[in-house]
Image (cartoon, rainbow over all chains, first blue to last red; front, side, top):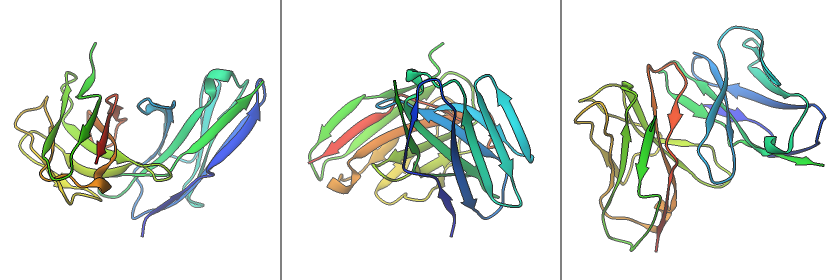
Length: 109
Length: 112
């Protein structure tokens, strides 16, 4: 079966750095997405990785290792507004997105 | 720019009743999707459409139907609602199947 695993909840301190991991087992691979979802709101796109390596976008970076079925989202200089759920999703061989359950990130002052 | 709009925002529905959740996008995206999101579970695909005139079943299609008469609209119908269909429903669209998806604001449905 297809499976996306990410931690249920993480806590970090304002101004610090946090890494959210995602491991996947899917039938085929056509890219990995990270989305941010604030409570009661819709998911919004953060990043897309299809090749191995690190993609940096401001305070957020995303890393992919296809051979290990592994990705992480790195958030630097954490701000209170970063408190949200972070969703990992993999596009399979049929170009359908398989979603993880999300990681709830709690930022403390 | 409106993007993608869902209606209603929330609804309480009696079991056994039918209901259509509306979704409209103005981005001229080819692909559209309906997901449900339940606590502790990832987004689960109900139905999708890769282009106007075509639809396909996702992971959890039972009890739901969709149509795609034109590019902009992708309504989701519950023919006879059951309490297990209580969920938050998100409509999404993308330019092509392998690009980022844009989400509507969601419809919170409670079936009692």
